[in-house]
Length: 109
Image (tube, rainbow, N blue to C red; front, side, top):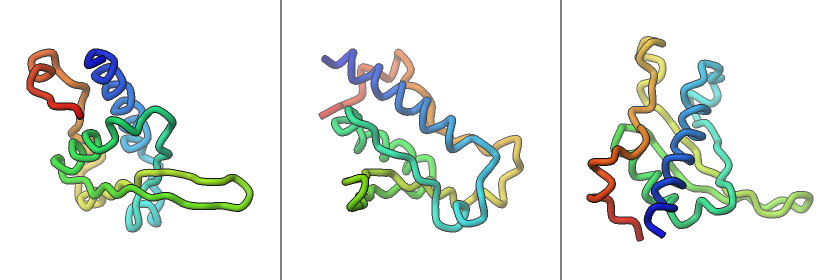
């Protein structure tokens, strides 16, 4: 079970980083945050992942939106308070996959 959660966390971090590290942020996203949909299956580890990004200085909030046409939409909103001041070359998320050495120290509920 633990091994599957670590793989899930690694996969989610890769997906999130792909979106956050793209250089196509609009001014609205810089000011209000970039929205990333919470996919099915992410629930058990979303708190851990949010915490990882928050420790790296990101503003992360969880939201739900109800629509009459498409139902319930869960998403995370990421804000990088240093986006405009950081050179393009170093605008990484600071969050990476879980290293083998730190896997033993992670407590996943």
